[in-house]
Image (cartoon, rainbow, N blue to C red; front, side):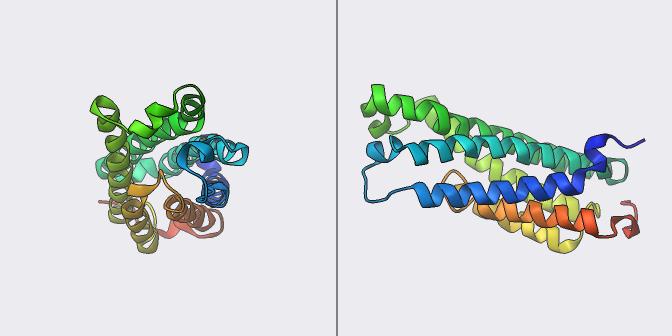
Length: 201
């Protein structure tokens, strides 16, 4: 018997993807480039949008899990590899976005010099890892999903392209492609005929 998450993979992916893209649009609109970095980080709309960006990352993870559970039985080891790459990359970037959404505004108030100093050492390593793993994760997921027929070729290509652009997903609007790719996949699952796809070899 399929799990509730697997059964609802289409609606979950559709809603999560649209929410993810919409929140990145909100981050773009609330980023007042006329202000310096510290003042912009003190603006309530920008702070709220950044915090909510982490929330939609949670939704993106749930969408990824639900899609994989729906097709796990027939995607084999390659499908599992693609899922794990995307999961690790998304969780890593979600941690980065949690820091930007909740810790950075506090630091901007109590120690603005730390923000202006930029990252170094382990902070720089952690930040770079999130960008690299997020991009690589979704590229591998797109290739593996395409190869195992978890989803059609257009979805695989969409995730690969979104993964490349997702290297800059910490900055708007580069998270929008991942959201739209997931939403489109959700629509296909919900209204399409995925049962016609042959099992992966």
